[in-house]
Every structure is written in C-alpha cells, then in structure tokens.
Length: 131
Image 1 (spheres, rainbow, N blue to C red):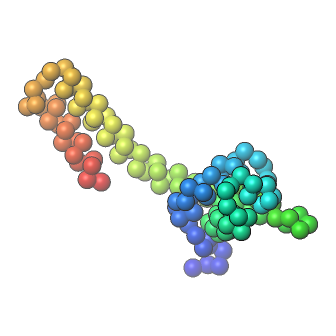
Image 2 (cartoon, rainbow, N blue to C red):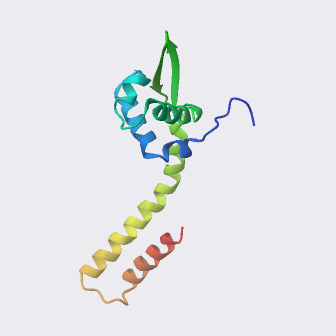
Image 3 (cartoon, rainbow, N blue to C red):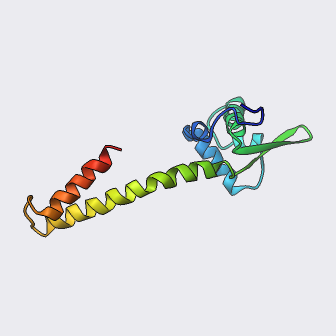
C-alpha cells in the first residue's frame, strides 16, 4: 500500500450523516474555516474537526492553513469512485423497476395470475431481489 493512498475510503467517509452534511455545506462555499463550519453543527469544534479529518483522509476535502486558521474545501474527484460503483448497480434497479411496472400493469389489466407476462414479471422481480 502506498503512502499516498487514503486512510479511509470514500464509502466509509460518507457513511456518517454528519459528514454528508459537511460535504453539502462545502458544496455551497468555495472554502470555509473550521470555526465557520462548526457553527452549523450542534457539536464541539473538536468533534467537527474529527469529521473533517476523516473526510480529508478519504481525499474528499482539502485543507490549507491561512495564518492561524485552517480552511477546508471540497474535492469531488474521489466521489467518482462512488459514482462508478453506483452506476454498475443502477442497471439492476432499472431492470427491477421495469419488471415491477410490467407486474403492476398486468395485474391492473385484470390478467389472471397465470398469464405468462405476469409470471415473467414476478420472476424478474424475485431474481432481482436476490442480488
């Protein structure tokens, strides 16, 4: 493992709702000092700094010192890993939604439970659920 690889991966970093809120806040501003960031949360500045450190370790935020102040900004590049992962599974969701639509439409049209289309849609839904 190289020394430049992140200590936390993107998935771990965004798993926490506070860190997701931090990212949303940093999207709105180009760069923010930790004192301003911590004013948006009902926790200590130390706690906010710990969350920022995890985001920084994952490469999601960059920090820079300006005098005695540490400022943070969002780096969206590591989110591409998350986007690639989600796009792989998106096709399964789309297939499942299409199967659900066929199932509901077949059921609404009053087709009997034995119709081939209804049976195939139901099977597709069950197959997708096992993923």
